[in-house]
Image (cartoon, rainbow, N blue to C red; front, side, top):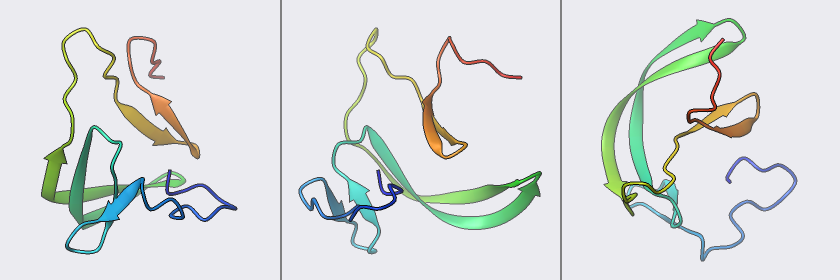
Length: 88
């Protein structure tokens, strides 16, 4: 969403708004969390960030039996986690 290169990623103002604290938040998300970074740890070629949740909101819930897999951003792309995920 906001990490797309080569485009004006916030051009469509109907898809997002700003929190009172200034951060952009997309309208078509299930939930969001606003955090404060409390620590960083190098892990190989990556950085693990520890954060303290300051504010959150559940925009829409998932009914039992509906798809509700979590997403992970890894290697510059989004991946859906579920029964098919492989940990190795």
